[in-house]
Amino acid sequence: MTRSQVDTVLRWLETRDLEDEVCLQSMQPEFDLSACGQRRLRKIRRLFWSDPGFWSQVLVHSEIGRIVRDVVGPHAALIFHAAFMKPGRIGSRTAFHQDQALWESNYPDALTIWTALTPCHSLNGCLMGYVGSHLGVPIQHQFVKGYEWHSSIPDAHFVGQKPSLYEMEPGEALAWHPLFVHGSEENRSNVDRKAIVAVFTNASHAGFQAKDSFLLAEMERIASVPVDRIVT
Ligand SMILES: O=C(O)CCC(=O)C(=O)O
Image 1 (tube, rainbow, N blue to C red):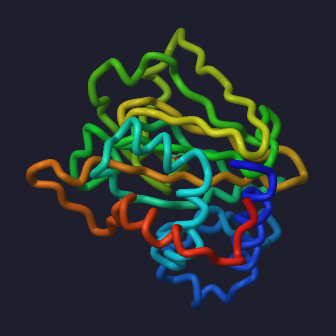
Image 2: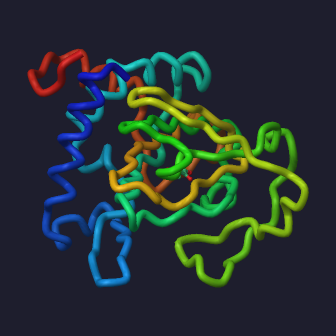
């Protein structure tokens, strides 16, 4: 994403961050809590479905749309779209997992694209992952004491292995396979570490089902109508 696209998305997210919790319910919010009771947004989901016009412009006019069309193909559909806000000082970690383990349906062709909106480095909880893990098999996930957000891969699985750290600048993106093992540490800096993640898959597969889905081709149609809300 370009700097101006990143700024536009940050402004959109800032508005959500200031919204009343009740207004955010359809985005299934999660919150981080400090020891003294401070509550900040950790994650919101269903970004696209809360503002399809805005997000069609962002996804199609950034490199994301082109990459998805090349890799996933003409029947690509968005099935998950979330923001990770990882607030300064209190932003919690994301335990190691394979995305496929957290989904209700199988999406073997899915492509996850994670875009940094702020600098992401080791101090503020950049993405980490095990190179080559996508070539393996689905790993057993379980609920681990002290980490309730979702099931994850117990530490014992990684004895003797070190994850790679992906330090990134705003606008840079990572793309991965549904079996790629990844996570992130807590934010130990004073500033928020923000990123958005979009998952696309091939919607023309027999038996394709998803609670939310939106075709890239339809986004392209929407984005072809000029609007003044996004600067490219
Ligand atoms: O942004 C993060 O810290 C975690 C992202 C993640 O785990 C995901 O998108 O699946």
